[in-house]
Length: 372
Image (cartoon, rainbow, N blue to C red; front, side):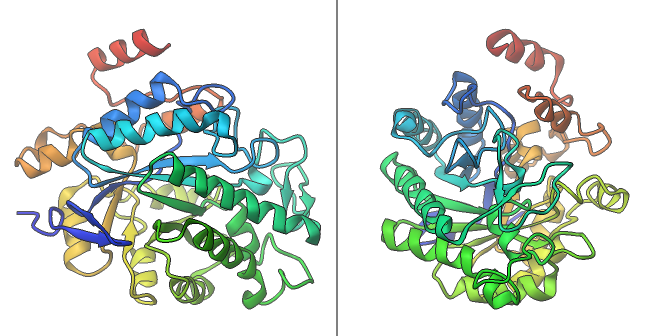
């Protein structure tokens, strides 16, 4: 049973012991200022011990001043955090999983920045970011490069570029947020130039170190990036030699729309996006989005909709998920409740570390006693 979920896979020359990964999930567990805290280490120790083959650490900023989403966003932009990053990679690997660090520039969603920057000065929840000058772009590309090199130096097994959730790489791709008239704006061939430049620079710098890509397939906004263009970008991205594409949908501006809220409560609600991108490329595709039902996840692999499964909140709610499924105890899984009112999201939006309301009372009490 679940022969696909627990079969080996290969990414960027590395062997994954199964097809389960932890998809990146921001929970506000880093210390204020982006340090590697004890709470962050314990969280990722549990994720590494969960039985997944690969753990992707979330959203480490390449620029703490202008590119950080919050005061608790992990930092990959300074050697002062290098020892902490080394401990983070080691704690995951010690528990038997491969460790990947996702690096990111939040662009117009850099809420911690006094003056966010973006491809164009498009209103962002009442704030207008500064449109990037052409001569500032090489410096930002170099920030990605230096952060990727820190991930490699810290001992991570791979690095992931965050091109999802409407962050900076996706902002250049989107016709909604990229209104430029220079070589980085206009038709898709120009709008994809910045993320492709970032990929090329990072891959050149890190050598044979695998580079993955978190991929926004559809903004779920009428004037935003949609599948027709994202499939073309995926095909072009695949030719750069990225190790995998991890597919997601939506941005901060669409997540709260009633149709998207309703969709996001359905099992496997982003599988159609993963399948569409997989049809355009010949490299591993990771699917995510309410895949906490093992039968749904197994079917997604068996039917060819995806090559790997990304578990995020489902794995956080129950770090024993893979073990329980493999041992025939799926009925014992503590499931992420889609009707909980997004309690974890509300916590992090208020700048507080998140706790899962589905946790048993004894776990909640012990966790808060230790870390709060």
